[in-house]
Length: 356
Image 1 (cartoon, rainbow, N blue to C red):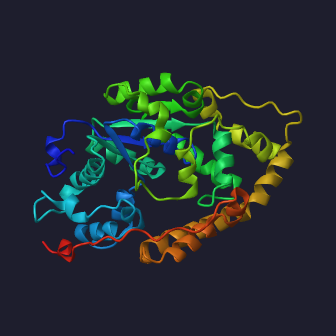
Image 2: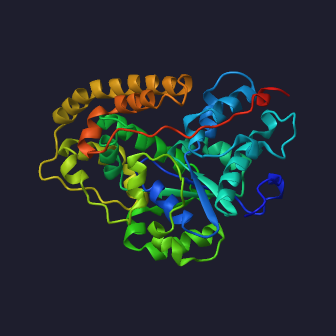
Image 3: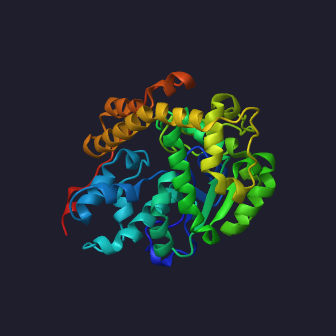
């Protein structure tokens, strides 16, 4: 196992980040890369989210992060992360501590390359590029219509077509500002020609080729991530995604999605679907008006969910489940998943963390 107690300043490789709109293949990419003998990408650590949204000075916010639901599923003693840092560490060490989290987790599996996967990283992309200028950032891209429909069917997302489109449109506008710093991988290309795409990705990362990335289901690490069903489905052997959006999205919303994401379609080569009877302006306006209540409910539920995550102890798993269900309750039934979550692993956060 590599020495994970060393200072990060001596790390000889760049961190790896996998980002993209939710439901665009980020989890599948993570599993594929984690099958490589040298790579471990953590699952949605949410470090920046907790430091940004928690109250108090840096140490109190870091204390909140170590108490978080997301950190608990790393199954890692915070003392391992803090080992080797100055005793009087503060805000100026925030970037270093984040990389230590990723490095120490990779060290549990004997891996030397480390990183994080998560759609939330899009909001921190500018900061990541400033703090880690040599970072390797993989942008997973998928047909916006498929992403919108998949959001509609996810318990953690929205039942509003407007809301799903807003998320996709916002993420793509943010990512397009940094296209020269990212490696974009289309999910459709990855599924159609996995070896060609994975060779391209590993070359970009700077690690040698390994056949193991083509067989990620045979190389899944133990105790890996939060066992949400939508994450675990990517642990199975990948299949070509069915274009269920054709049947699942009403024609008026196919038209609006194509219209609102016109730039993305042109940039990434997605062809608009010709409709036998294009919706009139009146039909489009009616669809938007009918969707507005769902959009409003999503906003209210999201605020309540985030507030709950920040305030509720992570050991109250049933409350976390209720918060997740509240975003898009019908999605649990549509997917046929069990809503039950296991208790998170215990984390012993040292109280001296609050003292300088």
